[in-house]
Length: 190
Image (cartoon, rainbow, N blue to C red; front, side, top):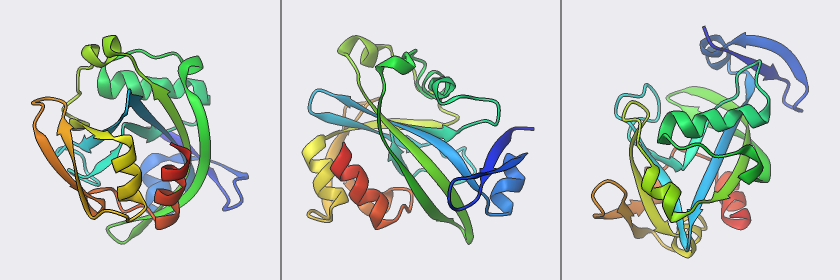
């Protein structure tokens, strides 16, 4: 049973709780996100149809929960699990921490989202092996288009799928239902 640290709304520790129980009780907890960029592109994740929540929705490159016994540096395991590539924590750049309440089918998912970014090389991009249990595909989208979409300046933009290099139309409604505050902050710090 996976356990995570839980927090008060002011980000002070409350203890440890099983992942499922923390979600059921709408407890604040920590998550890790990493937004990969490659040249002028941001890499987005299309979540797997096999996942129990936010099925098939778009998200940043990598995301996951921080286990109770992990340091922030340990969270690079998410990158290995979802994309099969190894990246050193030293290669990540901390952007910010955003407190976010996300409506997950009537239950509030309360997260302190630790957001990092990482510029990846063509060599690493070529080594990506998608874990189909967690990730259906990756979408490469121009960074400026991504910002315009998040800031509501454009309604529909396109990217390219990683697996088939096909055009993929993107709307903001295709993303996990983050708040406008989250989208605004991400668009400013990326």
